[in-house]
Image 1 (cartoon, rainbow, N blue to C red):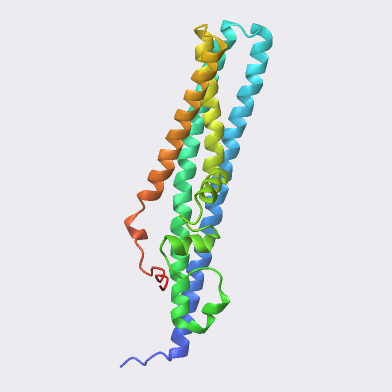
Image 2: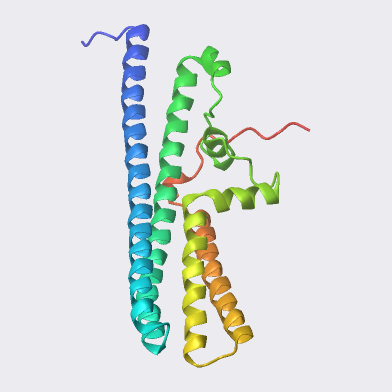
Length: 227
């Protein structure tokens, strides 16, 4: 007959297993950040290289039809790469959200073993959206629409989305210039292309948040506020 494991030894082994998984998740989050920064650097390299190339073409073509044709082609490539980069960043953000959910669940297990430690933590043991936002240090949704909008803009997908949208606006303006449109029409076409690109990025962002993996269904939701 197998001997029973002493409670203290069982708790110690459980904590060791949980801590190992916690460190593994931290390492995975670090890799996610590295890929995000690598994707951004790759896009900015493509963008800066294209701008330098267009400057050389402009000197040779004197901003004539040849320059407009080359600019539309090159900026279209940059725009395509930018859209794919934004899409990948949104996917990586969702991955990071999943890692934070996993760490919150581990923290919940820590508190089940040692509830007296809960007051020493500022991060959350709850795996729903409010718990994840608390761990990330992000303002809860609905607390301030202006604050939420500003936070979306300062994230990597939001910042890069604005740059990509500006490239899209430049493409629209160059197309209008190619057809000989007046300055006002060129400005309006560029603005329409810019807003259309911003709308695409915004839709992608909302869809990535609203369609999480079934494994992210909250198991330890945050307690409802009293009153």
